Length: 625
Image 1 (spheres, rainbow, N blue to C red):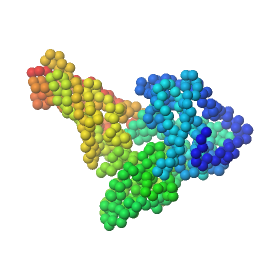
Image 2 (image 1 turned 135 degrees about the horizontal axis):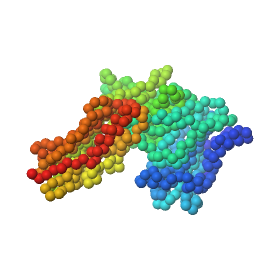
Image 3 (image 1 turned 90 degrees about the vertical axis):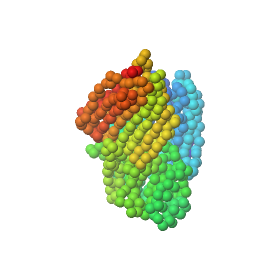
Image 4 (image 1 turned 180 degrees about the vertical axis):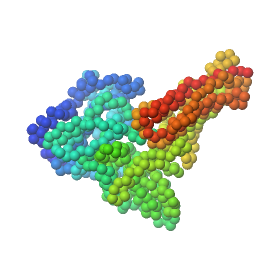
C-alpha cells in the first residue's frame, strides 16, 4: 500500500470499529459489497461468468467497466472517507483517457492506494503490479498511475481511499453512466443513524436506494448493464448523475463557494497590477481578459479543473485551475471598474418536488457576467467551458442553461436566454461540379451559429477529427476533413472543406446522380430522446446541394417532395433544376421551436427526422441532350 498526504490511519480504525450487533445488521444487507471489495480474483472469476462480451455494446467498443464501487462514510472527527474500486476489462490497450489516472491532493487531504494491478482473466493470475508516483506540478500535487498498453485480454484493477478532514458531511455527485459500458456499479453511502440524506438524480430517474439501518444508516444504489453515455448537449439534462448530501438546499451548495471566491480577492499578479494602473478602465478590463487567456496561466487538465485552493495556497503569478482563473478574472475586472456578477452553473437542477443536495459538487463551474464602464448591458463569460466564450450574444455552451446567483442572503435561479431559430443554425452547403465520368469536386461549407459549435465540437475545438463524429452519404464522397478553412464571425463560424468523390453512375447517355448528405452523431441523439425531454434552445437545420452538370447534360424527372408547414416542428424539402436543367439544386430545412418534447411533439420530431434520413439515398436522373 502507498499512503500520500495527511492520512490518519489511527482515526480511521477507531471510527470503523462498530458494535457487533450493528456490524451484523449492516452485513446482512450489504455483505456482498464488502466481501467483493476484498478479493480481486474472486471478483474477476465472477464477472467472467456474468458480464457480456464487448461486442454486445457495439463493434467498436474496446473496453468495459466490469465493476465500479464508491463507498462513503464519515468518521467521528468529521472526516469524510471515500473508497473507490474499479475493474476494467479490455482486449487491447485502454483508450487514452483511461490509460492515465490522476488522483488530486488538495490541502490536508490524504490518499491511500490499496491496489493498482493488471490481471489475467483467462488463467486468473496477477500479471503485473503497478506503482504510482506523486507529482508536484506548478503548485498542485496528485497521485499518478499509468496503465501499460496490452494487446491481450486483461483486467486493470484499481482501489484507493481518500480522506477529506473536517468535511462534516457525506456528499458527492457520481456519474451513473460513463463513456465505457459498465456491468455493475455500486454507490454506498453511510451516515450516522437517523441523520438525513438528501439525494437527487437527473433525467427524471427516481432511483430509490436500498436502506440498511443500524448505528450507521447505509444507503445503497446499484446499477447493472449500463451502455456508454450518449451525452447530447442540446438536451437540458444531458448527463446521468446521482447527487447526495447530508445538507439541503442551494444555499448550502453555493455559500461555501461564495466564501471561497471572496477569499481570493487578495491574489494580484504583478502584470494585472500594472494593467490596473492605466487610466482607461474599459481598455484595462479588455487587456486583462486577453492576458488571462495565456495558456501558460492555466492548469489544463480535466482531472484538476474543479480544484479550489485557498488564497494562501494559490501561486500569485499562476498557473491556476479553471475554477480559480475564472473567479480571479472576475475580481480583477471589478477592480478595473467593471460591474461583475459571479454566477454558478449547476450540473443539473432537481425537479421542483425534490430536495436539492446541499453540496458544492452540484456546481459544474463558475461563470460571470460583466459590463464595462459606460456599457448598458451585461455580457456572459465562460472561459474554458464554451468553445466560443466571447461571442457577441451568449457563449455557445450557455444558451438556455440555468444558473445560480447568490444575492447576499439567498440563491436565485434563472434560465438564460434560449434565443430563437435565427440564433441557432446548422447549415451544410455542397457546391460541386460533376464530370461526365461521374466524378465530382468542389466544397462542403458548414455554418454553425448560436449553440451549435458547442453541440458539435464540445470544448475540443475545431481541430476535432470530424470523421469520428460525422457520417457521409453516399460513402463514395470524400471530404478532406484535415484541410478545413475556419472563418469566425460574431454570430457563428463557417468551415469550408474540399470535396472529391464519385457521385454519378453512368449508363450509356444517362447517369444516376447521387445527392450527398451529412449526418452528425450529436443529431442522431435526437432520435433517442425520451418523452418529456427538454431542449436548451430552438434550432434550424439546413441542407443545400448545388451540382453543376457536365456540358450537354440535363436533369429530368425530378421528384416531388412533401413538406410540413404548420406547428412548432416543421420541414421543407425540394429538388429543382436551374439554367435549363444544367444545375441541380436540392435543399431542405428542419425547424424546431418546441422546447418540451411531450408525446405528440416527440412523435412529430421523429417523423421529421425520418424525412431527413431519406436524404441519405436521394438520386436524380440526368441525361445527355
